[in-house]
Every structure is written in structure tokens, then in C-alpha cells.
Length: 278
Image: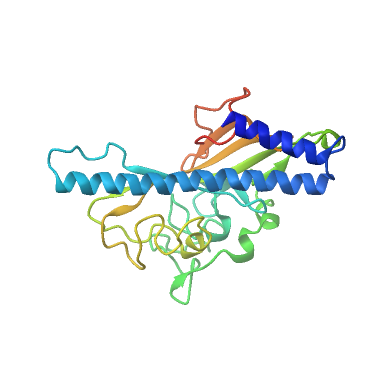
């Protein structure tokens, strides 16, 4: 792998000659390399899903074989134009939320009401969704209330882009950026009784099959065993360096979906070349 990366880097430098490409073109190459990185992780996740499924079927057919030990699959979402929100105060219960998909978050996980809408005094909050949260019998979509401009107005809310350029030296062909991504963990549902776990808007932007994500196929309710039970959701933050056509990871930090606090396995040291699991 290192030889392949070195050859790719040498080829890029050979193409540049003594002068690297313009910063705009260099940044496009940087983003493409990051996209390939997450595409590779998702391809590995689907391979793992298929392997675990095959091992499970083999164990069911032959009692002498052990079932697979692993029962979870990780998938990744990254959008260079997207953003996540940390520390957002729910306008109903005050809980501080980590929001990976502001455009698709309909309810606060703590109280069950819209986190963006202030409720009228005396409104019955035991009913969820209430009259304020619902529209035409359905949960009200956040719409413009979930735009970056609106969310920045709330005290304590930190709107963080999924692609944030850092100090760099484009004249020497070096770029750095902090990249934020969403990692969703799915576990195997033996009975196949779990309904669609996230909103259709999230599924529409899924990096793999949106109709059955990431299970074995079909539409509607998940009515057979598969990897579609939502286990947990994380927002990762990794700093990449792009130099000579090579992507290198410099640091990493992961935040849990529920608490919004940094997990206890961040790193500030130079790590391995990008391409491993995050």
C-alpha cells in the first residue's frame, strides 16, 4: 500500500513539475481524495455485511459451525458542503444536542418535540408531537429553521462545516483541513421487527442503497433479519493533510450522538496514512 501511495505521489509531483497546480484545482483534488477515502470505508462496510451474512447462513445450515462474532456494521457520511451542529439548546426542554443532520432532525431525543420551535405557555407537552410541532397531522419539517444562518443565532450552538480548511502552503502543494463526518453503527436485527430508524431525508442522502440501508434489499418496514437496528451515531473530526497527491491523517476526535461530548479516544499525534477505519 505504501509503495502504491508513493508511486501516486511521485506521479502527481511529476505532473506538477516545479510548480503545483493552482489552489482551486489543488483543493478539488484534496476533496476528491477525501471522498475516495470514505467511499473505500463504505465499500469495506458492505463487504463486511455480506461476509457476516454468509457466515450466519452457513452456521444455520451446519450446527458444527460457529455464528459470526461480529454483529455491527459502520457506515460513513461526508458532504464537503454540509455541516453539523454541537451544543444546540432544545427550545422545549433545554437539552444540549449534537445534531448530525439539521435538515432532517424533527424531534429532540430528550423530550420528543421539535428542538427548533418555542412552545406557547401552557401548551400540553405530554402530547408528542404537539400542535406546535405538527402540521397537517405530520411532524413539521425544520425547513429554514435548520439553516446554518438560523442555527448560529442560538447561544451555545456551534455550527461546524464538514470541510474546514486549515493553515496550508498551497505554493508548495500542501493543504490541510479539518473534516467532520457522521459514522452510523448498525447492529444485526435477528427478528426483523425494526421500523425505518431514521427519516426519509437521511436515507435519500445515504452513501449506499437508500431503500434498504444498509440491509439486504426491499422497501418499507424492515420485515426480515438484517443489519438495520440503529445502535449509535457519532460525529468524527479528523485533520487531513494533502501533499504530493497523498492523504495523511494528522489527528482525530469522535463525539457521541447522545452526549455531544468528545469521547475519550482523541489523538493529537501524526497517525498512519489515511485509509484505515475511523
